[in-house]
Length: 399
Image 1 (tube, one colour):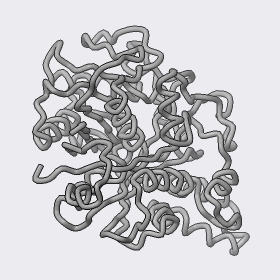
Image 2: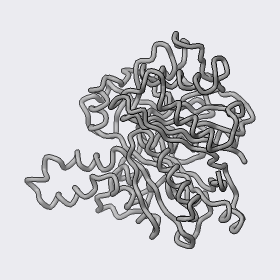
Image 3: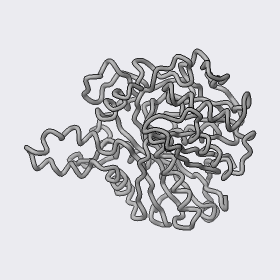
Image 4: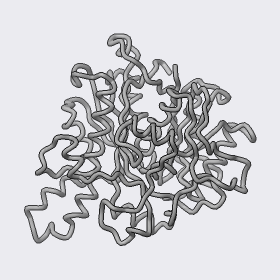
């Protein structure tokens, strides 16, 4: 890369914690956040488990000190909490003091508000104001407004690779001299729409998800938000900023294989990892840990495993684990929260375990890390693959 992209702040809220510290404690102690549905009405309550954040919208509004009479969506509220922590973590007091932007991502958008008022829009015209909250860009504008950001705001929605692509776009904006610093990440809340949609695809488990296990049955959906603050090397030197980690490489590819399924040979994942390694300049032998996409669906884990073997070679795949058994699959936010987890692995020299694993997959000889493991980690590769074949890989480095 022509210049390093520094990460100077990060923030997160997920089913295992309301901030970075709480998430780290849960990851360390093996405390997952998969539970029965309590926070919204659905006929699947009691039958399907999710990674739900046990805070109501009203509690989130209070936490953010917002006006209670508003139409802010749950997706926006979660994003505000994570973005605020990221900005504070980066020590930014004047958010408009330099050329600063926000690249947010979501797939659910304002679906929780849409579902709530859908049947009353026609009969109660005064509720039509809530329609504005539906689209994906509304959440980005709400987060920017809450932060007081006056600079560039953009939204990415590429399914489950969304936050990774937001991070990539932010890095490119800095590299090309468009912005000095960018707040990047993603946010998604749970909703009936996504729950019913994934259930129709028959890729939800009726229990706890078991990534890379031979007997895996599907994923648990989750909700979360996470943001990073990316800054140019010049900014870091000018402001004497503390750097949490560097974004050293990234790659995005689309195998155009199927609307929802990954290709049998992992072509999209292979191309994304290959590109990320090339951009980073990091030799594949120096990748210390992979935070795999690891959704625990039969198709994804097989495809991703094949791609890793193609990249690294048989019996040479680095140690890896999926953290989705902790949080559930948080859709557009997944790459954001796993970016935070990747940075935590380097900061604390530890690999977080792949929970619930029992039996190695019969198709190849790959076993994830199943217990908390101490290890000095300099380079982490993090995968995020979305519907439509949109595959993204990020590489984070200590220096």
